[in-house]
Length: 419
Image: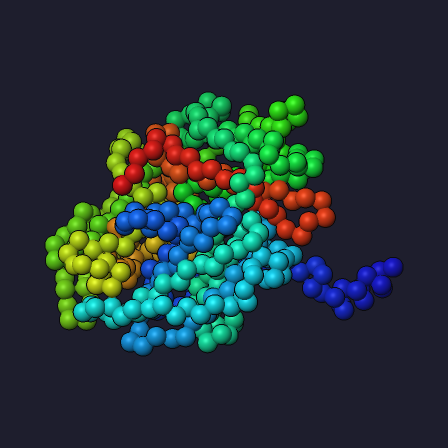
């Protein structure tokens, strides 16, 4: 028997190989300001999450290539299960067209010190609900990937309700936020929903700290309702603190939290105001973007084409911290970008990190990396009053199905305020 198992392992090693988790990622340093969002009116549309109902073709991808001449880029869509591994579906199962699209709408930057080409791509219509990865690559070679972005398409067949409330755990009442969920599936027959339904909650569009409600607390068969009301802290998020921000909408004057701006012939330089830990300070309410960023220019006409790229030096003065600090937010791919890690400057006695950022408004926190986890609390503190955005995603895997359907979605805010 063992000999047979060894032969099977030797001949078919792929049978036990773990699937790759697909994620948001920028693979080349010349690709900047990548945004995928639901179309809308005005500059605020950039804040729309890339979550759309089935049958909608309302997503747009935008990015800049720091180059003088355009490369030839293509895009493809990959259907994923709820854990962001590739599903069992083939392209023909979820898209009616050939699954390779030219990314050929572009414009040149206008009178900017750093030249760039701004690309726009309308995401095509899909026929199945679920998670998707948008993959962009060069010269029709899928191995020359320049970026990947995740988005979700939901088929509105179940109704989702979510309530944010003080945590049941007394110790976390001043630092946490609890989310209780109800799923009404009267509009869709679900087989054994206690086992086939998965509820995922994410905070501020992060995927590193999602909560997964695998089994409901109560099942109301007579009303076709699932309730997720945990009592042991499983659905409690650290509330965190309001995001810090830097206002780069101006280059001829200092924006908020910008200490200095210097315009040279080849690039614009800026230094942020020095920041310090807030874990011992009281909560201060102000408007933020929940870790996101928007491209905006208050001095010239077209922010997409006339905005300068600014080399921004972030500064933080911190003592007696354990570990190495990172710039944490969408601008740094939530700590994964190479520039996210801050280094200590002995002469200045502070931590520093430099980013090349297009003019706009950028949110960030300071975080310490512990393995695969991010600790923001030891530097930023945590307050139950903090405004956060929560997405609740309800997946269903029917018996014999080859993929996870996304049947319900809702977005809720704690203490909703908006920039």
